[in-house]
Image 1 (cartoon, helix red, strand yellow):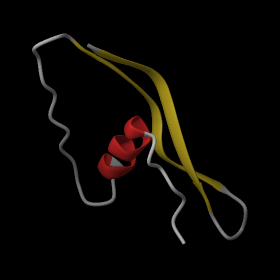
Image 2 (spheres, one colour; image 1 turned 180 degrees about the horizontal axis):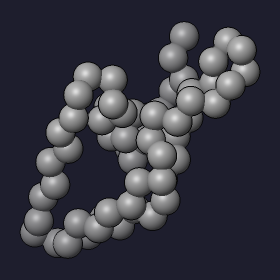
Image 3 (cartoon, rainbow, N blue to C red; image 1 turned 180 degrees about the vertical axis):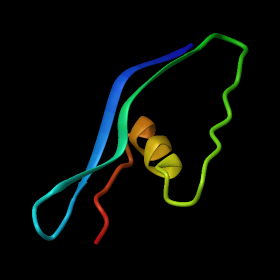
Image 4 (cartoon, rainbow, N blue to C red; image 1 turned 90 degrees about the horizontal axis):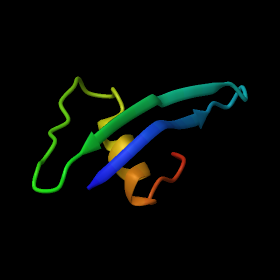
Length: 60
């Protein structure tokens, strides 16, 4: 089982402004179930997955 509550991941622009790629995301996946994430290019799907795995690195 995986439960995520209020996950936020942000990028910081060169102007030192916060841009949230993942903003207040919550979900729960029960044992034996799966979840698909769909969305437009640049909407934060990969950032969400990387944040969940602990592999989030700010872009260069």
